Image 1 (tube, rainbow, N blue to C red):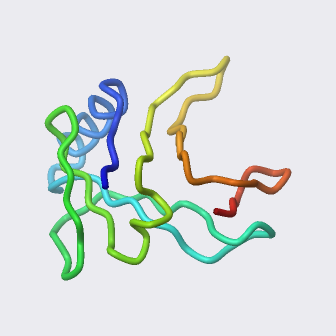
Image 2 (image 1 turned 30 degrees about the horizontal axis):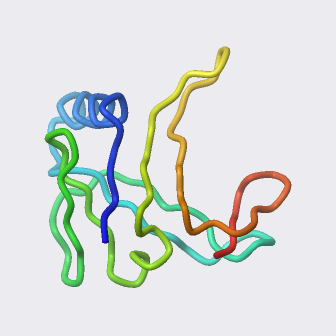
Length: 107
């Protein structure tokens, strides 16, 4: 099982951890939400929590809680700029469907 970052996403995360002045990496997870079932959670991690599974991608630590891992296994997180918008983009091979607004997905 693995979760990874693109080089651009890793650079973005590393920059913001430095700017923030603290943090050990990025925490990914899912939460129950929306019309399709679950939505992504994304936050900076300041410590490893019990039950976390840890990955390393382009020098950045990625932490995923054990309950979220089946939903995120194989996911690659990229950081993209599309027109005036920029942000993280999830490439998750487990997604079977998504709601129209893009807020949530099902597996």
